[in-house]
Figure: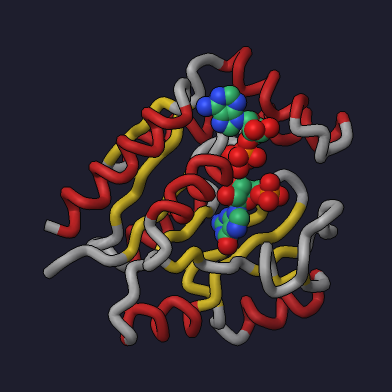
Length: 185
Ligand code: ADP
Ligand code: 5GP
């Protein structure tokens, strides 16, 4: 069976969004899953486009009703992928990419062993911190919370199917294309 569900994960600021944006502009047939989150929208983020923004109560209600394929608490906020959205895409035969944290990625693998997990690594921890700070989207406390969990995230990477070092962006995008093409047969 061709594998249709790809999960891209990695520490905050490593460049997941940047790599995927470049990949999707060259491969428009892929669907990027839209997650739910309890964090506040950043400037320019649109509800239903970047995320479905939710209150903690609504998020907890979705957990209780088993609506999430996976969910995790990440640096003080909740994030989750709706089961219904993924099942609908797969039934329609769409290739789908999830950009989620490492805890969620491993939950997906448990439930759907055919899912392909791809971990994006930074060239170095210094580069990672520089990128996260250079994005200017988080306050200092949030940056620290995100940097504090980098080691455990890298540790979880041993359970992933592939790793890509995002040093040169174009090379990282090409590597992602090769992995996905290879998995699709
Ligand atoms: P993530 O989605 O993993 O949190 P982003 O895609 O938002 O990360 O990237 C974080 C920052 O790093 C952004 O400012 C982005 O422009 C920059 N960046 C991404 N990839 C590279 C790269 N290969 N080289 C240098 N900077 C990069
Ligand atoms: P950000 O707040 O920077 O948009 O995302 C923070 C982290 O949450 C990133 O690692 C991102 O991949 C992850 N994330 C986004 N959506 C989901 C999701 O649906 N589930 C899980 N587990 N993580 C998510």
